[in-house]
Length: 226
Image (tube, rainbow, N blue to C red; front, side, top):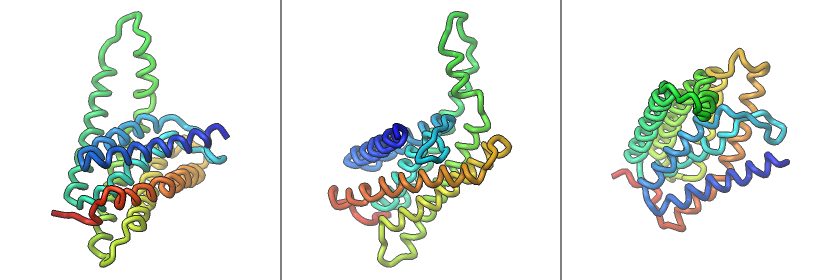
């Protein structure tokens, strides 16, 4: 049960970080979303077992980034959310490029860190590229779904709409990542998809209600597209 306990603390920490960034407005949320997106793409290479399911250790970060973007769309408008998404993707590209540049330096003979960096960033380039592509597509879908629901529903239900968008986008993220990164590697790809998605659903259901309640705590508007 130690992994499950750590996962609960992980979700609480991600939620608290998002909540603490809200008083700083869109800038604060964008910073946290970007950092979580980069961390998720780094830690996705580590696998673990949660609730008897094989998954990665980055699911809480991915969900936190997704719900943070949905929160901006909900409270600050689609234009600011689109800018946040663009900034996040730009930083992910920057991170990917500087990582490659960093690994290209020839290390000193007594350097003990280079091998650790290689094992983390270069042993599975397929996983890193797949994670980035899946994240970019899923977050774009998340933004488009929330924006569309805001237009189509006369009485916008923020928590329901953002939860629905997060559930759909994370299903896309999980499926794309599994096929791009793990096909031909794992024995049962369907089990991996179901397991990872189940963990993300748990994280979404834990984090989103707290984000929704902050609308009233900080007196944020339900929609603002100006």
